Length: 493
Image 1 (tube, rainbow, N blue to C red):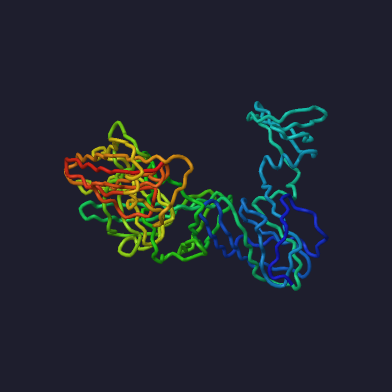
Image 2 (image 1 turned 135 degrees about the vertical axis):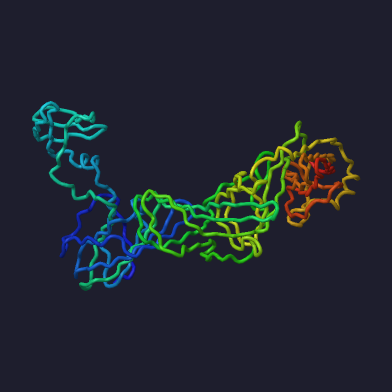
């Protein structure tokens, strides 16, 4: 006896097998169904049905499996039987399929006289179905036109290997007759989910109300009734964002968290069980609420970045950002990847849409910064003031200001003459708002385009960071005012 039997799946119509002691058994429709949906178009379907098996060999049919099943992943478990063969019949009943299966056979044509309504019947042989139907009607070669003429086709029967629904047929050898639960398990494409969030920010309260919805899509060609639903957040889904660049938005995750999430751990992924059973209809998109966090502490701010050392001819608008935590005192849980639509209360207390951002799978205890658009009244402009050569003696004196990679000093050995440079950068920040603002400004490319970068002078102390290719400052700009940040970079190249 094999408690778990795996067999090769034949990707064709019903195969002719050995003689069976019993007639084919049509199993019940779906039984107790559990669906695990992963990020991306992949799901695990577990379907337990009560089936009565005769003793000996018989073929059991399982209708209502996903039409996008991955047949090589099918397994069937139960007691006191062995699997002899299994087939997935994916050729579904349709007018086109019926006509294709009738090639070489005869059909009946019913023609209706548009004037009198009288019907005439003729037998015809189907010669070919290639972009149209070619018929032999009493020795005449005709084409069955699709031009709304009153012509009907009657088939003599339904081909044995056409199914009204996707069907898995399994030939089993049962040790004893009787009813028993059989558990069918397989992977299917066509099912996907994502998280969608709605955030309402209250400037006066410095707080955010956050609601999360699961948007579930079923394009598998089959519905699943009253199913247990488990959603798994895996790393395959998500829009990759650049961590640097003048025009790109910054990564939403500014600080990765280390707190334990309420979501269930599944290997290295998070699993979100849906409490109530739900019906996932075919070709349906549905939303299920899964997160409701009220009065989450949040702050509004601005961010900007610059790549390489160089000037911008015109001032650029800073990004408007909203920052909050997924840790205790904040959202309090991990947040699966998805889009966040942000609303802000206006002067009349009405919620107004201000933009949307995307987050990747975010662990609990993280800090998120959502960029919703550009602020027309908060601007920045990098200016390269001067670039000069340094002597080797001057270069040696600035060794204490080296930017280290992961806290470790990197030594460079070159065979050519070394050139030492000092670059004087000035960054101008302006604020046309009646309130002071703070801009999180990042200079990127420090050790991407140069070697052994050192910051020998800066007018505002930078934020602590182990990222050796960038340096970050929190720049406060007064109401209707401006602030200048000057930085001196020493580089080897």
